[in-house]
Amino acid sequence: MMFLQFFIWGAWYTSIAVFMTNHGMPKLTHWPYTVNPVAAIVAPFFLGLVADRYFATEKVLGVLHLLGGLVLFAVPRFTGSPTTFILVLLLYNLCYMPTLGLANSLAFHHIQSQEQQFPLIRVFGTIGWIVAGVLVSWFLGIVVGGVPEQTSMPLYTAATASIILGLFSFTLPHTPPPGKGQPVSLRSIAGLDALKQLGDRPFYVFITASLLLCIPLAAYYNFTQLYLGAAGVNKIAATQTVGQFSETFFMLIMPIMFARLGVKKMLMMGMAAWALRYALFALAAPGAVFWMILLGIALHGPCYDFFFVTGQIYVDKKSTPQVRSQAQGFLVLVTYGVGMLIGAQIMGKVYDTFLAGTTALTLGQWRTFWILPAVFAVAVLVFFAAAFKAAAREATGQTSAPAGR
Image (cartoon, rainbow, N blue to C red; front, side, top):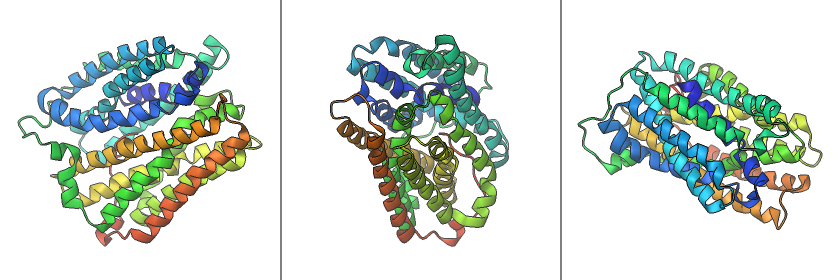
């Protein structure tokens, strides 16, 4: 289940900007990374109002993946109408994003130890993302020739996997709706009740820094594939899987590092890794220095694990059992939802400004482009370092299960 869950996302997410650029939509490539966080904002409300209260988890998971697969098959048909293309992609993301929480919820329901068992399950999601990238770049490259990311094949691959997972979901163990019979509250679904309980100065500083960092963070997900193409990299999706290999390694060593460093230093290292990644991209751009680009991609391990996963741990340590799920949902809404949404729009406008009537950035322009998120990430790091002071009981401890990409 977890392998296919992230195989689907990895198959289309790392190639969609290249596909759109090749089909006459170079100035609209930020929109897939806008509709994705919009769907992330909607997902907690869908899960809280419908999936958690009325239907078995495995059945909702199956239906959403079947519907999503059918919608994704239709996406390439609308390249001649950019507005319709984006709207259909939004419809697909509205089907997919709730399944992230559903897959985690189903897994948690059927295991005894979250800390010991779930990471071993979740790592298959990272493996799925890696396999998707390799399949798209290497196998599809043999089948279709040229640059497969420019074709509709990655979308069809993701759609096929979605149909397979949809059918497979109905064979998963029965998982009754966890919130059946509980009163419906929009405040609890949005995480506002949890925010009221957890709210103190360190928590507000953490939430603010998390939201702000997601603004430059959006540049990586949206534009790295285009940057790799400009730098002469042919196996774009496969090259980006180096980040997932790194993510797997750092996820395995996180318990040791977290116990030694604590939450503040871990978060600061994650923020610094984002700044360093963008700095490497900027330095590499004029001469397309591949080893620097590859090192920037390999920093995805500390970028993702030390920032996102450590953030989930921090929120979990501050939470009580009564508001734990609400608190994690609020964090996802702020980061993957609001932060990524703002970031996609801002960085998209910046990219469009650099284009200025052309269809692609020069390597010199890429250098200037990557400097901007690097400086922004450094500013967030300085703010966080100066303002965040965690309570002693929240500063160290054991890791919790990560909540998904």
